[in-house]
Amino acid sequence: MEHMNCKDLIQVMQPDGRLDESAVIGVSGEEMHRMYRLMVFTRLWNAKALSLQRQGRMGTLASVRGQEAANIGMGLALGPGDWFCPSFREYGAMFVRGVMPKDLFSFWGGDERGARPPEGSRVLPVCITVGSHLCHAVGIAWGAKISNERIAVLSCSGDGSTSQGDFHESLNFAGVFKLPVVFAIQNNQWAISVPLDRQTASETLSEKAAAYGIDGVRVDGNDVLAVYLTIKRLLDAARSEHRPALVEMVTYRMDDHTTSDDASRYRTEEMVSPWRSKDPIDRMRKYLIANRGWNDESETNMVSELTAQVEQAVKDYEAAPLPQPTDIFNHMYADTPWNLAEQKEELLRHLGRSER
Image (cartoon, rainbow, N blue to C red; front, side, top):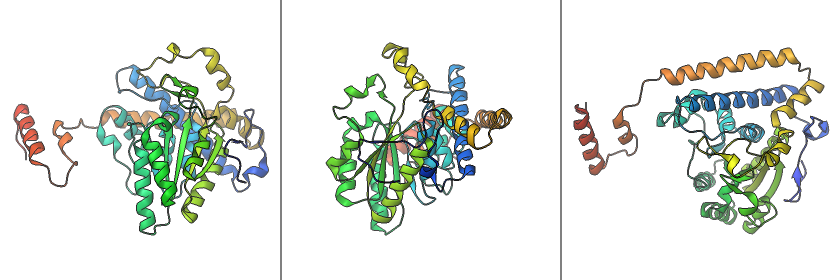
């Protein structure tokens, strides 16, 4: 794809499924089917997680409905040796990187064991603190450059993170030291109840890249192919040329910020309804039906298969033994400090048992 002005919106697939095939040369039909499958799985997982939360079987959740294309596109763009640093609305990308669905259920169920990264996959745990993980991404990228490791690092956060000091410090550091890192922003128009026009006075988020001397692009975040091709190009440049970049993925948060939020208090149905016709899954389905032999039977079979996988993940999550109270002291330090050792002993006495 050619370099574009940072304010231009990169799009290859229209909301009605029409696609300029010349823009996606090199992306096979099999890969497109995989993108669609992963998006549908992410939505099914998300819907089940919301149901579990409402039933009191899981803690809070930040819904990703409507942002599946941004998730899957960036997840698939990563190379096998690259690092991914997510925030808290990147389930689809984390699934692509090998995170088990049951583990994300566990994490949102309050079990920190669900945050363990999968063996051999370079992905960090969910980061709840807004914007702080951008610094982690920069640190990993700097270490990779120092050690001459030919990899790239991708961080992802929301539009609200661009108001955090961590955002500016990270982009500035990456620009000055020419680090192999790409900062992806899921611009879903809302940071809890704060709309984008109260978040920044700039016309776009992508143009903020100019202040740090790095590349900035803006892409339709509901177009999985545009996201994939754009971020892949940026990661390739970061990996081979040490060119950091900022990519703004324009999408929309269809649900509440989290299950503890009520979006109806600050936005109207008139604000939300135009985005329903831009649904990323519907868009890809229309294309596959018109061009790749997809039909109702294919859809039914796939949804049935993926639903069974989600249900099995729920069973695995709820069948896991409960964590021990003393786990909060474990795995924090190679050598436990004296004060935490005393606290752990006090807890054990309270529980009526001793350390084995």
